[in-house]
Image (cartoon, rainbow, N blue to C red; front, side, top):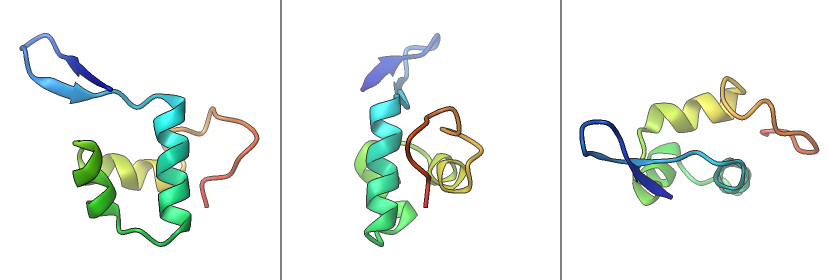
Amino acid sequence: MMVDDNRGRKRARLTDDVIRKIWERLKRGHYQHDIAADLGINQGRISEIRTGKRGHHITGRSPM
């Protein structure tokens, strides 16, 4: 989901559903930079999700 930030730029919102989709793609062996490009977010956000720095609040599923 894309939202405008306070400067009028489009930013992707990392909802719980998006984080779950990222986990699934990581489990299937997709590259972080490919996932990031598809979602329009920085590859660093994918890395943070993979390592548990983001999305750790979601229960019932592990990042990897």
